[in-house]
Image 1: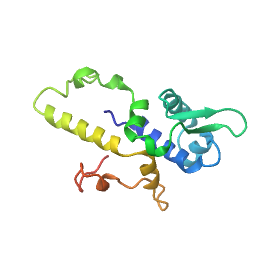
Image 2: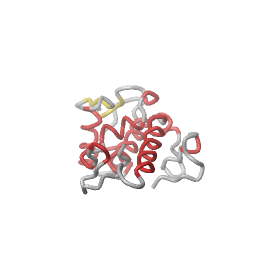
Image 3: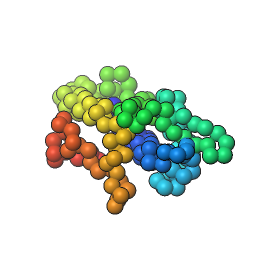
Image 4: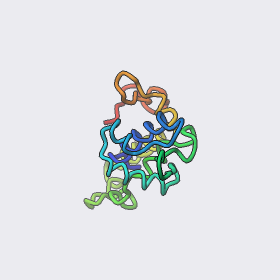
Length: 157
């Protein structure tokens, strides 16, 4: 599973939606301002999230976005799968550069890492990510210590 910038921004924006959509749909302009993300970039991401069935849009005054399902029913893996471009990876782990990372001396390392990342992202929901947001920093605390699959010293860049 690819863990890139699109997925990270999508998670941040969806956590914002979770926090602000209790009474009404949330306009992307509000999310863009609060999270300091380009509005046009958010529009692209939310088009993908909408196609994946994760969000619903409403038009007109008071319009915006809300989650299609409860946050507790949406895993972070679903978010990353909805927005990450699969064109950087070809079947069998071969990258656009032509390098096949799933072949060769470290193939087991990369396959194991991919498996751990995907397993972790499947176990964390948007609701958990929203609960982990710290008011002091506005960022997300590391959830890895809550998961048994990752060591306490592991850090994700």
